[in-house]
Amino acid sequence: MYSPNPSCESQENLQEEVICTLFYLIPIAIVTWFGGRLLGIVVAIVNALAWAFADSSSGHTYSHTAIFYWNSTVVFGIFLVLTLLLSVLKDALEKQTALAFTDYLTGALNRRAFSDLLQMEIDRSKRYKHPFTVAYIDIDNFKQLNDKFGHRAGDLVLCTVADLARTQLRSTDLCARLGGDEFALFFPESGQEAAQIITSKIQLCLLGEMEKNKWPVTFSIGVLTFIDNIPHTVDEVIDLSDSLMYAVKNNGKDAIRYSIYTG
Image (tube, rainbow, N blue to C red):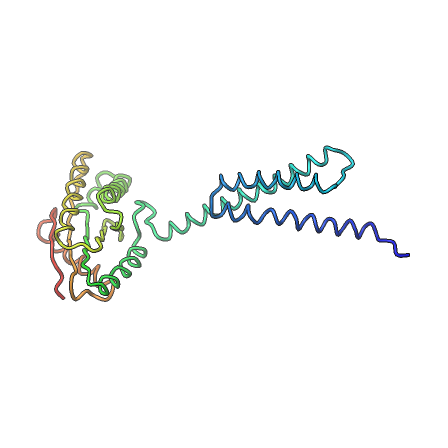
């Protein structure tokens, strides 16, 4: 008569236990990834208790009661480690994604992200015949500020410009640092009048903050509205706005010039 090999039965039982334990990991991983660390920990605790209940109800016997509690603790530890590792991984990925689209110093959009979003808005505006406006901002005398007060002061000015601009913008508007001391603002579905109100407020806020901190800089701003004959590419839109800003700079700086693009 065939007699089952105890070692084979032991291996089969071990495989079943491993598969069962892995089954508990799936909901923990899903909840942690999409719901966050705290919710993941809650599910890890619930699943650890469920595992302990299932193990004790299965008729599984141990040589000592303490082994059951030890196994339950180890299983909970595995669930908890998985939760923490996944949450750390997700945080790292989100930070990397943010760094790919934001300026490392000011937190504003970088040129790449701004260009991508602006291109989508250009396409949308051309399709639905909606106007949009781009404001190009250059900090006057920024090099002299760096030379006199140091690059730390220059960095603080850049961060202040980005922060103050964002506080005045609507949720649909965009603020980007295009490089050096140059920023761009984008106002979707906004004609010249609406953009003028916002940029005037931003200019006043910026000048007030510069004066308050005794930073000897001003701002040359070109505000260009696109209604008809909208250019096809982002580079054209940015270059046209940049040219308007330079017209301000060449005419004495510290001013805003508004214009409507006619093609």
